[in-house]
Image (cartoon, rainbow, N blue to C red; front, side):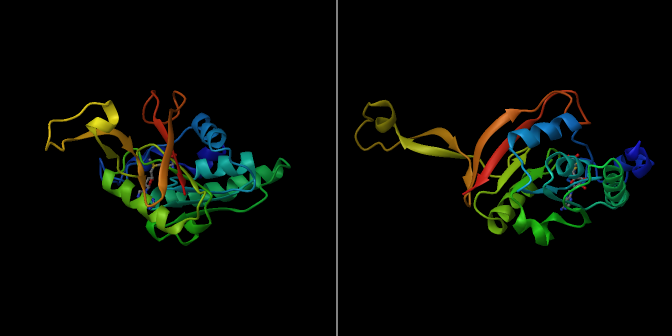
Length: 224
Ligand SMILES: C[S@@+](CC[C@H](N)C(=O)[O-])C[C@H]1O[C@@H](n2cnc3c(N)ncnc32)[C@H](O)[C@@H]1O
């Protein structure tokens, strides 16, 4: 009901963007938002940020469920305009029901690369399913340069490059290579860049996103 008032023309969300680009719209459903809250153990002490927040429904659900401070930032005009209406309407409705938000939620129209309050984040969510790999990695580097140690990040696609770890064959397998040969073996993968370390990857619940019925990867990082 609230959503249909704030988002009068849902079809407009899927227009006016470059196909196969970072502007592509697609939503995280409530069951997956709950999974994010649980897997990141978000509490009222956290500061949650959704980078590329669309109409803001992830931010609003996290704020309402956990009573943490929560921010979203969205580049595109249409979802940002809808977020402008959705945020205040959601807060007013919660207040009317006697369960208002402890903190104001902030949904900003802008570029996440220039988001001043990113440094305050303790938990960052990125639905980067459609982002080009280079943009996801740029964002990872930006988070690492801006945020504090201990900041957790959950994204649907990797935000740090996967580097193969090198080891010498004898060390690994206990046999000697022919004399003079220094052939390295590539084993394992290290997914760490600028102190941003991948700590796990879980499949989301099914039907967690608006654009398909399957699961997405939920990749967790922590900034050391
Ligand atoms: C797939 S939508 C995700 C919406 C919401 N986070 C969710 O999961 O339901 C990704 C959003 O990221 C936004 N986006 C892409 N690049 C951005 C940038 N540089 N700054 C802010 N938002 C950006 C897109 O416009 C798009 O609305």
